[in-house]
Length: 142
Image 1 (cartoon, one colour):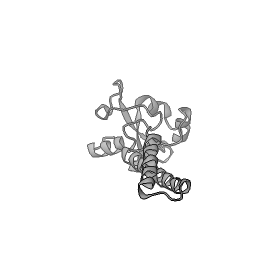
Image 2 (spheres, one colour; image 1 turned 60 degrees about the vertical axis):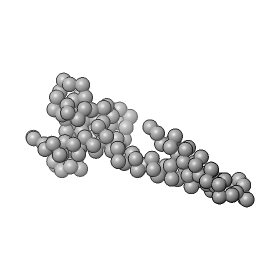
Image 3 (cartoon, one colour; image 1 turned 30 degrees about the vertical axis):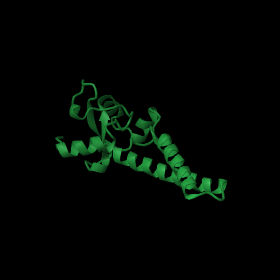
Image 4 (cartoon, helix red, strand yellow; image 1 turned 90 degrees about the vertical axis):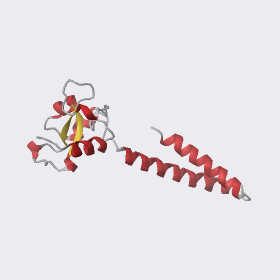
């Protein structure tokens, strides 16, 4: 089946350019190149042989070797072989997750700071908040 460049770009971005099964890095321009480093194909999460559709929700990028070895097996079983349960997140989803971690740790550090020093000044609370933001940034880096 022939896919549009727009769809290929969407699918590539869906997993931040990684195989959804083994997480190997893919090269966007290497779509359909079987013997190329970073070559990839489109995998139907639910195989067409088992009633899967061509909808965007059912399509994921997969390196050639994973796509060929998966065949009609379930995506869950194919990922389990590599120790994964879910597809890699897109860059946008990763950024949202990091932002939430930084915000949460900033709030937590500010709260801890207010308990540690009851007479905490505004600048003291801000310092605890900055410490939490720094901690959140360090923890959320993958």
